[in-house]
Image (cartoon, rainbow, N blue to C red; front, side, top):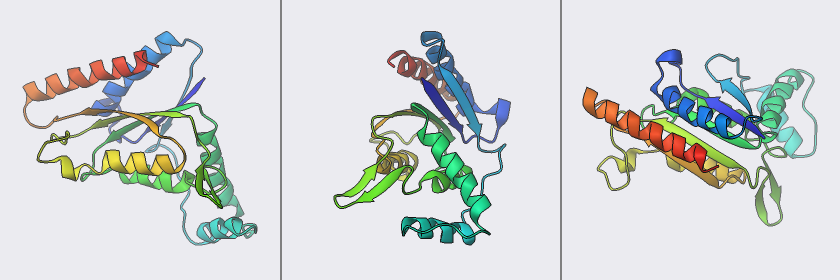
Length: 207
């Protein structure tokens, strides 16, 4: 069993998101000693740019053609990242909230891997996801409280977006642990973190 941990936090050892995610991965590893965990730190790798020739290559392939010689190298990087994603059995996304949504590096990564023929196909019956049956776990951190029923709920664009875009790839079994609020007061931050860590442990224990 292989888990891909997509880390979108730029704060390294100071990351509250990763502090919670470690509770999930350590609990899961204790349950499944043979589990392979690959961490993809989006702030430490060079992501290919989906511009110019790479965009032309995308449309050429969708129409049954091939990428130009100039775009071939970049396109191969894109295919490698997308193929690596789909070749894992389950996923963990560690994602702090930025301006009500996801960090730009995670958006760039999603734009790279969401490729026809790898994560989804267009068919006569509509879009068919190619990662069907796989599970995803998302751990997010938020400064304010965006829980359902709260005044800030309407500003949470993380969960709806991630459910929608990965649902396009056939991943519908997505569980969230949202640590919130974290920027009100030290006491509230501590209790919110402890609750989120407990939820992360429980989430892993249920797998």
